[in-house]
Structure formats: structure tokens, C-alpha cells
Image (cartoon, rainbow, N blue to C red; front, side):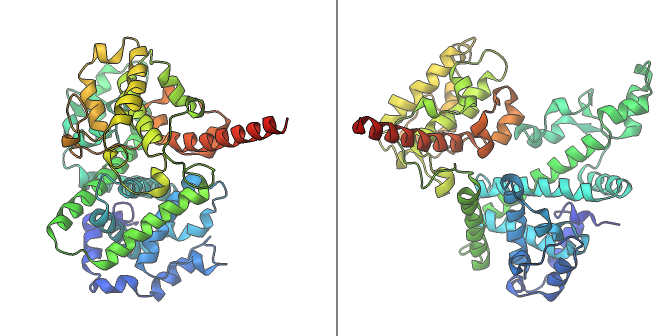
Length: 447
């Protein structure tokens, strides 16, 4: 039987494994047992020593590397990371998970890019590990984890409030009856059998819920618990004098992996060097941004302007290299008088909002407060330096999140294949536009 800790490291079994570690300093020591498990994994690529983690910290980094490369590298070879799906690696993997969460929590906190990558990577790792299991084992593991996470068959929808508010789950993904979420088959049959005509209730259960929804709920709950654990670590570290240097070093390595991914896989755009802040060029906007700028004429209007366009326009104008530099800044670090915000950023956003049907701020004037919050100025009517830092300056949505939350915007063109974020598209196209303009200027001079 596969241990539930292999899928949910935050389980009771996972906590027992962590307590058994003993001396924390061991995480940096070469471990022959770990290396033997790695090299003994069925499809593991071992032609290069760099593919083989030698200790717990190496394994932690490999977890993040796997996610970044799987997501962005067209030439990704899963055999280089086959050990991550070997159930024998359980005890080492659980420790690596906790090391990652603690390193991110201590240095970057829950609202950082590192935290988002950690949470998303855990979700993806669970998905692929489940795929490797036989159907019976998979069902048993998912059921055991859900039973440990949800203590009652009568689940009020408010139980998933965090998941729904962070959009990890949508209510439309779930079956509700009298305010309760239905997951269990017997519960479904008891509630709905007498209402179903012309089809077998059992088949309706499989179509509407079945393994698919149960796995989705389980994965999203583990992801949310991972995020909560990172938050708890961050809050605890604020009260401590000095974090463990091993965790700080690991945090730096995580950041290095993400920075390298920008350079290697075009996450920050396929251009040389960082794009510096300059006047916006609408010709370089990606298709999704152009669509919002034309005005939203259907659903998703609020999220398109507030959650999507506001971060994009503000970062594209003020801090386009945020993903390559990987340094958190406030708007006043770049625009100390807020003159650019007032004269360039906000007018563009207001213009797009005015083009909506109906105009967003006429219909929902309170959304101006939400807009300012996304810029980092708290829940106030106007941006003011005295309020800066009350909220965070939201970074632009990734293409993946746009597809999930605003699918009507995602109409990719040929250049979209090369990037993972609309801001990266803009940076790439700015570089191309400048290069083309320089070429044209040179040609004109020659003529």
C-alpha cells in the first residue's frame, strides 16, 4: 500500500517522518540510501551525476527543477526526474517538502513568487504521482486522504471558503444540495436517486463526481494546506531572532532556479537582457491585453480590468523586468511622486474600463478601491504614498491562470507559444519592435 504521505506530506504519517529525522544538520550530508533509491528507479537517467540528488537539500531543489522544466522546457526529459515517482523515496521526499516550505516561508513569505511555485509544484507532483498508481490503489489513497481532511459526510460549502476565495476551487465544479457539498457515492444516491429518471443514478454519480472531482478536491486541499503551512512558518519566523542558515541558503537556491528558468526557457521573454521601464507601446501588447483594452462586453469584466489588466499595465510601464530580476518592489521605488501612475497607468486602465458594457466604474464605482489595492495602496479611493504597503502590488497573471479564470481572453497568436506570462510577451515584443525600428532607421539612413 502506498503511504498517504507520498501524496500528502502534511499528513500524520508525514509529521512522524519529520520527527524521526533527528539532527537537522543531516540534510546537507551525502546519503547513500537516497542515491541508491534514485539510481535504482526504473527509468531514471543516470548518465550525468547532476541528475542524482545526493542529500535532502539536493532533492528539494530537484522537486522545484522538475516543475519548472516540466512546465516550460519543450525538450523536457522526465527520465531525469523518474525518482520523484518512486514510492521508495517517501521518507526523503517528505523531508524535502518540509525544507522547501520552511525555506520559502522564512525568507519570502506566502505572497511571494517562490511560494506560488512551491504550492503549484506540489499540486502537479500529486497529479503525476496519482497517474503512476493502479486504479484500485489510486482510489484507496485518495479516499484515505479525503477522510483525514474531511471529518464529516455533511460538508457545508463554507468548509471550502479558503479554496473558493483563492480560486483553487470553483463552486460550479461541485455538486451542492441544501448548502452541502456532495462527494460520497452513497450520500449522492440517498439524496438524488429518487430525482433521477431515465439514467442509472450510479452512472450519474460517476459522470458528475466520481474519481475526478474527489481527486480535484483532495489535490486543492493539499495545495491550500501547503500555502497555510508556509504562512505559519513565515509568521513564526517573524518572532524569531535568526532563521536557520541552511533554510536561508536553500531559499537562495530556489530563487536561483526560478531566475535561471527565466534565462533558459524564455519565461521572461526570448530577448537578451532586461527590458527597462519606458513609455508603453500598445503594439507590443499580447492579444489578451488588446482584447481587454477594447472593452469587455460579456462576463468577467471586473476580473479582466482589476485582476488582469491593472497588474499588467502597471508592471509593463514601471517594472517590466520583475520576473527576471525577481526582486519585490513597491511602486514608489520606481515612481516616487506617483506621477507616472496618475498620468500614464491609471488613464489607460480607466479608458479600458470606460469601454466596457456597461462602463465598469459607472456600474461598480467601488471597484476603484479594488484597483488601488492591486497597486499596493490599500483599500482607498485614490493611490496615496501614506497608504502604500497596506496591500501588495500584484504581479501579472500567468497565461495558465488567464486560461483558467478568464478563458475568453486567451486567443493565442504565434508568439504566445514562446512565453508563459502576458508580461513576458510584452517584453519579448518590445525587444523585437525596437530591433525592427533600429533596422528600419539604418535602412532609411543608407537610402
